[in-house]
Image 1 (cartoon, rainbow, N blue to C red):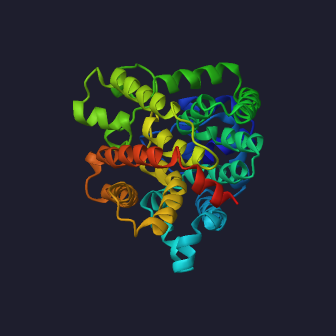
Image 2 (cartoon, helix red, strand yellow; image 1 turned 135 degrees about the vertical axis):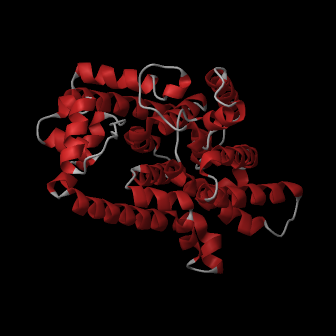
Length: 356
């Protein structure tokens, strides 16, 4: 991302998807290495990194780390109204959400997942204020992670949130135009071709290779269970479609829309690594807050909800102990997605109380 930003600033935007040019810039600016870190983001994102390129690479890394920490603190502050029960018990209790393991990885690696987290929290607030247009714009800006954002858009479209969908579509069109202006049409087509062929394990001849066993989603789970069978991709598509259709059949309301759509998007994403799971902070925070209020009921449904939420919070930590079996985290994610959907899709009374 650093080298891509510098390439755009120095007039080499038309080469950001060229492997040879990327390798030359990375060797000269960062360090010489036999491997290449390819640019897998839409070109418009490079504009954000341009200011960081005025610093040497190592200084830019720490500047971006400080930026990410600032975004995290802002996210925590913006989420506080949705964690009133947690604050009531101990004012510092919401800060424990920062112990979520994917956040640690995102900070360490200088990932842009925390930027997406901030955009989604902004969209959550806009939805609560009945401003679907602004929410759609903010989510569309998150197309830097299109594999996570597009499922959210499809669910909102299925739920007939027309204002959100229209704002998302218009913003996406503008961003596509900016990307073509930066990289050129030929390089944009090359980028799309590489993204379709991402992962040599899928049998395509193009695209950067990916480690499927590090993906905590349906794609990674089916690959892990089936051992790289050629049927992995068709079954992934079928299972993802089934999940999306199930969620589309019952329309939630208010902020529950995003609380349900976020874990669903991670579950059905085409590819996803541990740092991408940091966006789950939003549904985890809201579900934890609601369960503090309900813990005395001790009903079976509440016990299942609490168990699924706690398990989803701690499961990503298993990466430390079982790197090659990280796809197992997809099972707690599946449980959390389904239980969250069932418990919130018809929860209108509590929603009205919270939004007031």
